[in-house]
Image 1 (cartoon, rainbow, N blue to C red):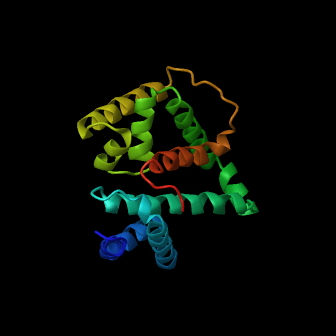
Image 2: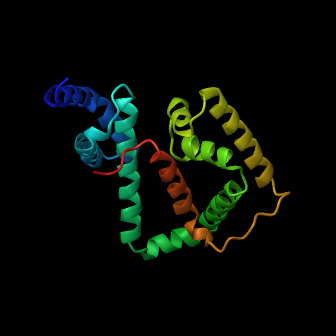
Length: 197
């Protein structure tokens, strides 16, 4: 197959994914315009990185991962660039929000007590939102093994969070727990994506 034929085949496969890619983008962004921009960025990145795609592998998973990574990168960038206003501070310091922040911080610290394999299973499936098949591909194990790791990880987290075990302090402010958890999910998801062109 010539380069021109390979490019044409790749382009056809990408075009066939557009409706599913737009639907996935809308499920993440919840805004039609933002989702369309996100899908377009993912398609452009996929096209530019087409030489790094391995023929015979799952193009849909590859492009969806590019889109997911772009979504999380945009969210992190927007969160860093946006200062807190008074309404945000009020919401974050309300009793319910404070409890939620502390719960997230407990979860983040509890994840640190899990084995790397269990933490990876949680990050891939629960934080990054990958289906079992893709998560097992990233983890380099069978789907059944991944499901087993995830089950054991959830049981271990429940045991840790039941209050009988002290969670180690790590110096990270509780308010940063959500960002840290999103970062963990983003790192897990990037394992499937190609490097940015």
